[in-house]
Every structure is written in structure tokens, then in C-alpha cells.
Image (cartoon, rainbow over the protein chains, first blue to last red):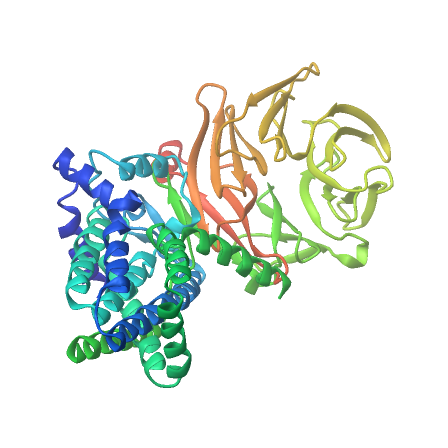
Length: 263
Length: 302
């Protein structure tokens, strides 16, 4: 499985460092929130406000509310798993690294890495060579982006087919593929992140359709009755979605740190 | 939709089972930034050590200030750990170690304060009364001379004998000290994020001033004008020489992120202590062998 993961990563990273334009486009897809998440947020908003019968609109709102709720749960599940698994990003593993396994330091054969010709990844690689590595670069498994955007796009797909297909394609090609080509994530990080995203989303949809049906239906009806208020809150949520919940993550991280220091 | 749903849920379950089945999961790393450092874990908490801080290689043995275990330990390669002093002697959190001109082992203590002495007969006593220095940090012995100790109240003191002090300088936090063979004192200040040189003549100079990503924790002189410096805030190991300046040579991560003490042996190998959780009394001692060590050893016949 590790060999397959490495081979897939090497095949994808082979596209990096060949063309300035391709590397610049990949960098844009990774680091510009508007390009990365803007179209997905737009699909979400389209689905939220799309015309239809009252029942249909209520059904869509219920699915979309459950999707948003699943994102918070996914964030927590991913962070918990990341704390347990120590796995640096692939571009870091291109340097001589020894991994601590049990009570032994095991040398890991360096992964070949094609340094991009442009963009943030080029600077990240240079900073890494001076040891300037943010701590979250050492715990890349599973991918937050994969879990987050897979759940979001699948949720949109369940509510609206056309918008959902666009969101899923954008997630797969722009958000996730760019992260593998650039060496930010290995295919295993992405696959497990996406699986967690899908699992979390379907679990929440299942609950919203059964055990929590009453709450989900009430929430959906409220958003229809108070359309203006709901739109105001939704705009704030979508701003945070475009930023991949960065502010929420920081808040959660602080809360977890405080709890850990207490217990 | 049902097919995709089943596929994804099945995939998640399969990956979870695979992950649960992994018996060897990495918990930390050593990333070499210059050349290749060969790392080896020498000691862990399972060997009877708590959370190690200061280290000192002396006469074929490694002395360990076990801050979390409230003890001073000694380790000879191939043998088990020996306790030289513990709480019963009145010490609390030993910080840095030095060998005096009399051959005795001295250490500072950032909780109990003062400077402590273990004579060659194995007797532990207070050398500098904690009332004179309530929290002590860096400690070094001048070549064939007195000790110098850094305190948490910003003083760099020369200890000329039991409870006899002379103020050498005022610094924000003299966390770690090391002398070169000429008697120049190098001071790692982890609050000022600077490396200081106090020359033999008493002149104070800032060496690595406001270097981004540098906060020195512990310093060791390796000979030939080369110093090794740990940085626990940025999880790095630096090499410093007047000619090359400050250069990061390794980055640590995971369980090895909190790098603390450092010393080098007479063969140029680097010993590092790591605290994984002081409260849980966990830590590691790792030895790093710089690239080309074997070739150099063969060439010199040592």
C-alpha cells in the first residue's frame, strides 16, 4: 500500500517543475481562496436559493444544513486523527529523514520531488530547506481539504444534481489534484481524507433523515420563513467556507490546547 | 447515489481497518538540513529516565540532568543508567551540568535554585546557596577555572568558591553557557533570542542577533571553533562558527520536537535530549553522527 501510494504520488508530481504556467495555475488553485473554494461556495449558494416547490426547497435546505453540520464534525475527527498519525508532507520527505518508530530511528529513502517553478510551493520548499516548517506540515494525514471539500461537494450533489456535479469536479480537479501534484499531500492523505469526508457527510444525512428529522425539518422551515436572516448567516458561513474554516480551526485548536493543559 | 455511497462507506471502513492494523506508526522525525545525520536512540523513559534536560559527555560517560525525573544520572554505553543524585539530596529540577577543575560534577537547578556539587567520593552538597540564586539555568566551568552560572533574575555570575559570587554580566535569560578553549564564554539567551560572547577580557558582544527562527536553548562547544546549539521553540539544531555563522543543520518533529540539552563527545558525535512530556516523565536521548564520520574515523585511525 505504501509502495502504491509513493508510485501514484511520483506519477502526479512528475507534472510539477515542467511549465511555469502550469505551476502558477496549480499555485493559484492551492493558495487563492477565491479560485480554490469560490466556485464551490457559489454552487452551494445556487442550491440554497434555487427555485422549486416548497417541499423541494425544504428538502434541499435540510440536506445543506446537515452538510454544514457535518463539516464541524469532520474537522474534529480529522484533527484527532492527525494528532495520532505523524506523517510529514511528501515534499518534506524529499530530504534525508529518519522516522522515530517505537524506540528506533529508521532512515526513510528520500522521495523524489520536482520543485515547482512558481508559486507558494517554491517558497515553502526553500523555507523547508532552512528548517522553517510549520507544525501542521508534519501531520498531513489525513487531508483536511479532502475531507472538507468532499463532504461539501457531495452535500451539494445530494441537494442539486447539476451544481453538485460542478462542485465535485472542481473539488477533484482543482482542489485535490493540485495538492497531490504540488507535493502538499500524498494520494493516501487525499483518499483517506475524502473517505472520512464522505463517511461524515452520509452519517449526518442519515441522522438528519431519521433520528434528527424533526430538528432538521424545523431548521429548514425556519430558513424559508426567515429568508433574510438565513441569507445573512449563510453569507458569513460561506465566507468561512471559502477560507476553509481557517478561523474556526484556530479557535478549535486553542480550545483543544486549553483542554489538554487542564486534563 | 446508492452505489457511490456504498463505495465510499466501504472504502472508509477498509482504510480504518488498514490503519488499525498498522503496528509501526512513526511518532517523530529527524530531518537533516545539511548533509546527512545518522541518528540513533540511546535511551528512553523505559530505561529509567524521566524528562532529560542538560547533557554532558565526560570521560567516556554521559551525564544527564533529568529535569522531569528530579535526578542526575550517568550512562556508560552498553550499561544501564546510574543515579548520581536524586530528591533525597534536596535537588528538584536539575538543568545544566559542568565538570569543575576539581573533577567534581556541578549542576544548576531551576526549581530548587543554587548550584549543587557531587564530589568524586559520591557525596552531594550545596555549592551555591539557593538563597543567593533562587532559580539557576546555564552552567559552565572555565578551563581550569571557576564556574559561571546564569540565573532567572537576569544575572551571569562567576562562582569563585562556595557561596562566593562575582557579577559578570546582566542578560535577560542566560539559559545555557559554553566556554571555548581560550576562555571565551558563549551564552544562549532564549528570551532575547540571541547568542552572546563574553570575551576573556570581559567584553560582551551579540553574535547571532535577531536571526529569524532562532531561539537558543542549549549550547555545546565541539572544538575547532564550532558550537552546536539546540532551539526548542523552533525544534532545530544549529551549528555556529565565526567563519560560517549560524546554520540550521537539523529539524525535529513529533515526539522529538522539544529538543533540550546538547553535548558532544571527543569523536564529534552529538548527543541530544528530548522532552516528550515533562508531566508524564517521558523523553529520549538521541545520538547524531554527522555525515562522513566513518571516513574521518578511518582516516585518523581512531
